[in-house]
Length: 182
Image (cartoon, helix red, strand yellow):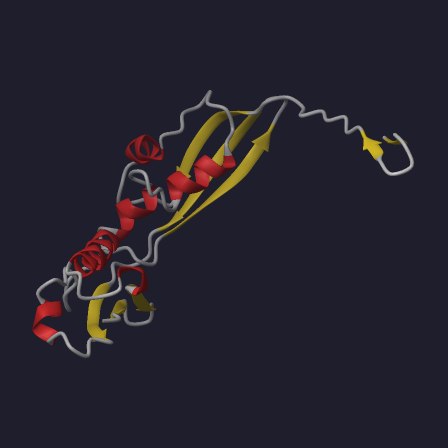
């Protein structure tokens, strides 16, 4: 409700009802063949009976910068084309059934690794820091580690080292380019 306080001010009262808390009743994995459902549930870190938290669910599925997540489990094993979609299959009085639909895809191998932007530093100095090499299975943690080690050289602007990952689903490969700035 809106009301007048004086000629220059108004007051606004907002009445908010949050409603009941929702809890996970069950979490089911569908489409996973590489890792068993129980293991994926442990990595997800959400159990039946926990309070529903969509942000935590998304973080623990896709990218948790404070720890391990389901996506890194797959992507560190070459499954670059991995996808997990959470779907609420039932919403009751205070509980939700969650089904996480997994598409694992094929393992991707690294095809080409390129370096650009190094004008003073020799290529071999940069190449020895690379943890991603042609022919290897793609690994997200290796890309992150390479980026960190290039930054630790102190030859390049650490904030501008961004890997350019170009997947090719038709061939099951990925090209990785590291653009550095002296």
